[in-house]
Length: 400
Image (cartoon, rainbow, N blue to C red; front, side, top):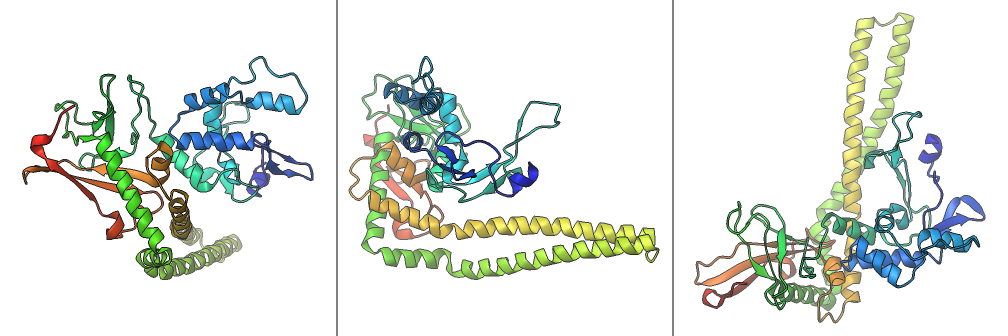
């Protein structure tokens, strides 16, 4: 099983959304009945819906559950409640990396063959092989959904959910800003405050900002970004490449050479360890000398393995930058005439937002807001990515 898993072949049966290829039992093909449901679940998540809400939507729309669909396809009677989706089923679909078109083996392990309990494996101990079957969703969609699930959004008692919940952070204490509303608010009074503020009894200031204000600022910045890029796509790409890739191209090539050199040295060390072992067995090398040389070689091997792993990970991240640029350019074409923000637009464009404490020293309330965009959050282009300064006279400020 270990050899089969490391060879890139699937160790289990196809998940919901795939079926076995009749011509190759080791290959998965898309189940055309289930794949649209998978895509819809991911789209609903990006639109701000949680697993429980998604399960209710699927049930209302009478979408067959995984068990019911399998029964239908095999000509068996449907279960008693064929549309009763469970939130755990939705979560299981959202966490399936195989939907990006890869094979992922050794997700779990057992401490002993005598124990039936399976334990979740660390990601570094899994075996992932990309492009082994047709993808149902893109890698960018999968990554975005995993990021959104880290920042769970829960509706308030007023049954309203903040458009930017989970995306706002305090630059002073690093905590999130909480969405504040109540049934008596008409929407204009909905606002965000630092979670460490706690009605002036916490460890941080309020960093108060209204959602209506933030909505206008974010929409204005998205317009600016899209207009800036669409006005000269080629120029933007060149500017971006100059910003991020001029020096990195040389760095990537240099690191790739380092990796090749380290791997060669690793192979040479295996040969050297074998030789000194043979010399020790034949009596040509003392046991004390053998132990010292063997320990030195093994320590060097461990150091080289860590160096290769870290360098390869860094190179992979740099190689992904161009893919991220293409994904962001596609977004600017997708939303040409955005007039109102939706959870989907916010989640696709925005990675996080920093809301600074207001400055009243000038007699006006000035507040900096910095927006980090998905895919391009580290690109420093002042005309587009500089912080926004929101300003209004302090005497006109209304409290919620």
